[in-house]
Length: 251
Image 1 (cartoon, helix red, strand yellow):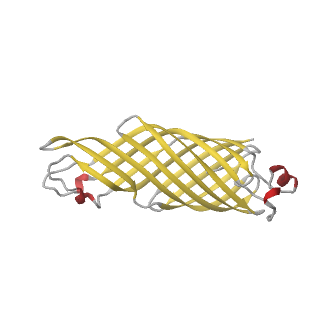
Image 2 (tube, helix red, strand yellow):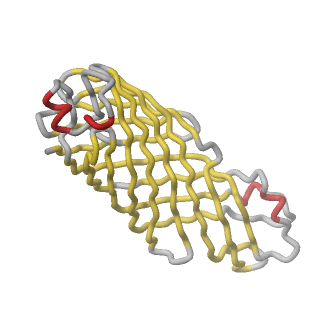
Image 3 (cartoon, one colour):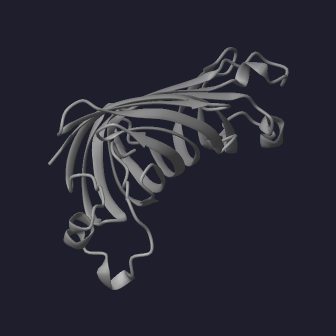
């Protein structure tokens, strides 16, 4: 999420006239071109199984079709962004990832007690994206697309995601705004390992997962603290609960 959306005082400028210098000289308000941010993001959401392989003779994967799966992920990170055009911002981000996925095998009735598969993972994640933005003197709209991937401590695990976030809002004061929107998220997780099962011993498993509900709502505020510093606070609501706190320096 960018701390400071494009806010323009006029509309209808032709494509050939949309240089930053032209817009600024004709009364448009644009965010400073460069930005660096530090952020904390945490989310919890239900997952669904794409596939499950469990090394028990005769185990039918169809039994797990409606299996309950919960995921929580925390990603403190840093981001760098640049307004390449007045309506186009590009960004890169990187940081640490700490997640837990709980595959509730204990709810399955297969004649023997099965414990939950609880997968803890940590590592490094990185990504890139872009934002399209437009607005009037007070109101604005943005659409952000990002892709992230990861390098995890466990080589038998992988986590990646596509995220698409449209937002609309109203600006007030210096580089401040309130906004609402939605997030469309397509995470892809795969894990393999060993699961202890009473009476059998250690059995291998492989599991791939994605989000059960890909859309949720978001609402937030950008607060222009000074000419250069902007604080962003955002919450996610619905089947995916999330919180974002971000401090950005723009120049």
